[in-house]
Image (spheres, rainbow, N blue to C red):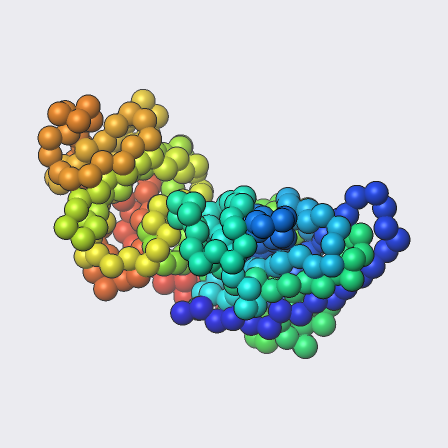
Length: 339
């Protein structure tokens, strides 16, 4: 379920320099990923995703040229529990689930690029100013970037199962205790920056969450390379590779799952198997996509035994891989309560 929230803008103008500059500020309790766009002749130029944590501001990678307006869309991080949230409007331009930079005809009803789809954008009226700041907001009670930062940290701690009493953005004992426990668990030094804290919170929350699609998380000590196999209609498909660094996750399937099982193969350096099983599918030494099962050698491919992961009835699944294989499902985040 996706919930669309109100997109509010705070516009700050300065004297115009030689080059335009757009700044996005996050006055919400969510880590946001923002996409920007503008019209260039008969085409729409869109770019994403630009990460901005609660209470912070950033300049997107794509800077629209001077003009009366540009387009903006934002979504909450998949690390957050509950439904996703979208800040947008009625305009629809092409985006991807992963990072993208797209150029598509204006008014297009579909996106030609692979894995691209139409996202919701809202126009930002800049009044032809050369510099402007747009602030994304959520609630009147989050009335400053400082409050957004504090409530954003509390939201992620809650997502991880720490129990925090409502504080309206103000520190309280349950918040302080939870934050101290999280810092200790993650071995974060006392002088760790707010950015470091949000990075650690989001990474851990992503491990606990199971967003739509199929996610591979590396809980081991070394890089892994993963391949998937699954049934798509009457066809069998195997695909790889996803390189996943220690402590990171990779979203291998972006759309909601609609299959009883997804098969996983994972290997470490020197092709050492880490996750394997009895069900055989085709693989290759380079990036690949194979249709069907069997006859791998006839198509110049190798064969490997994949492990089945149960996804029946689920729209999202996160497979956690340790140093020696698949790990049991993560315990409920409620295990990490603050006492």
